[in-house]
Image 1 (cartoon, rainbow, N blue to C red):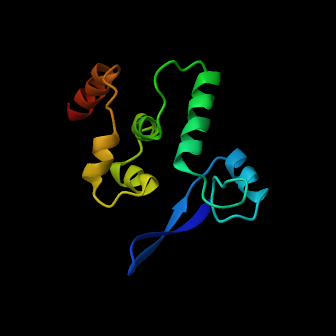
Image 2 (image 1 turned 60 degrees about the horizontal axis):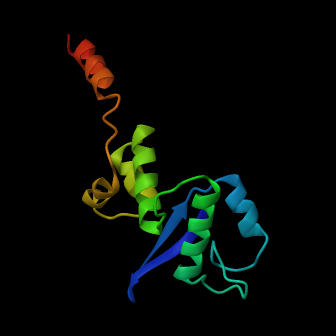
Length: 125
């Protein structure tokens, strides 16, 4: 877990704890920067550079769709929904204040909706 300070406004600072995979934590420990993805100098990595890395990762993974940071955020939200994490947990993990924003990022998986509704029907009987 990584603890970060999040500042939206000059007088509004809150602490955010981010759960990370072990590989990311090991990478972070290799440098002394406060950033998770630092530049070579240890500063904040420019968004354009981060986007290029994301596109390279997608290409190497065989993803042919246009990979953007925004789409990766949508994918993360949808994956946490498929894991049946509560809206409050997803909201916390994504750093959202209103749960409506988390819902905006989440694409509901309808492929197993029939199965879930059948389970619900059993419980209601």
